[in-house]
Length: 292
Length: 292
Image (cartoon, rainbow over all chains, first blue to last red; front, side):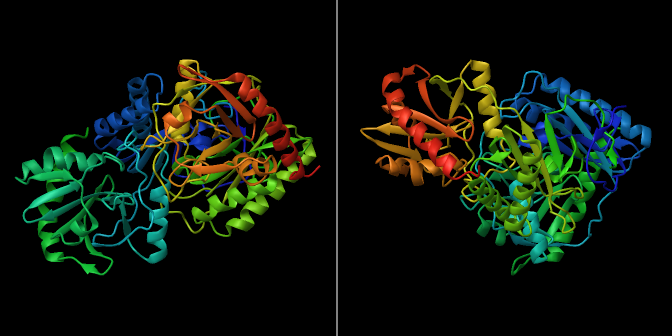
């Protein structure tokens, strides 16, 4: 295998593959690096088996389609088949990130017709996730208003990077992120649900945000199965601050409750009572949708 | 020098350096690749000497500061000093791109305090630029509304990639890009000026767009020197379509006129008459601000 020259050595992550082969670098002319021209998925993997691969593959295909990659469905399928094979070979348990970029290309924004998309798979250990209500602040940075790309998990994650960095600096577990109208859209790394007067509400993601796979499972399966109604609508910060329970969802945390938002302390007992059956139902739902 | 393994071989660009050393790859855990966590500048270089390095260095420093990199001014200065030295050594004539990313880091949006920023310098030949009025269309994609990051040249360039891709598909030289209110902000790769009733107008970039170095020179020096007034304000597509002359500016093209926008054909003679002294004055202004 040819080697690309790169300066500097770095601690290897447990497993990284580029276009199906073990590798820990990408060419410097990759358009994912130079123009954020690509998309990714972060998945949960257990003994080589991905959780909810179909949901992630569908979202990746949507992103590649919106980015006008050739054959987005087939490319997402190929990426996932390759990822499944590689993860099964090493019986990986942990997190997996699957990135698809436009590949190498000449300088300039215009995608080259000759570019071949690049697939980067990085398998790492599970993060340590505190099993306690989270303390969140409200991020200074707001989501860009971009209805044409909303919901997708593109490589362009600047707002979330800034929100996560602010959370670290201020000692928060995470930060709530608003759009420019003052509607709460998400946290820096998770979708948001509030529980108020016996029903759930989650922000609509029509102008910004990422449509999470666990959010989708809650909306389509988990909440209906438990007999809850959930509305997708605009939520102001005031709506969130007065909620009975506030929850975050993503691939890695599943469902977690928020214990406090800035000075507002939420009812931990109510959250714990609500969380228990939700977590069990989500876990069951994920298992049903994952090969074993 | 240690080598990083990467799969696939690619045609080498004339010169690429990573952190000051010749290299053609970056580690796969680079945050520029994974989260678009970084910024860049594209410059003109003649016999190893950069054009207007101060303007570019200042804009890079602004971007790094907004991204909360440690010591953004010093980092931009270091990047530019290194770039100047490397380009002088090879007496480069052509385009240069200077990219600064957050460097390698663990998975997750949160920037690691341990990450060391990475500097990537890619020197390439001059692009072939047609010396004729451009034929432009109007892009389907619109700029995201993001006043907190407007004007900066971050790695997140998805809208421009889509607009440039549409232009190629439709046989346009470039495409005009609007924001979500229908105001024209730029083309896919350049800033825009219109000339109407004896004065210039250029879009304000308060909610989106990139504040170009040549735009800045035109506003601050070139137009005043030639006795023109220029207003920075919102411009609708109708404003642009009824203008006497429409021009684009960037580092590589300098000033170019638009010959047609979709079905609207502009007055080429008026454009040529206006363009000649503007180009000469911009060229002189660039020379004054560039070492020789």
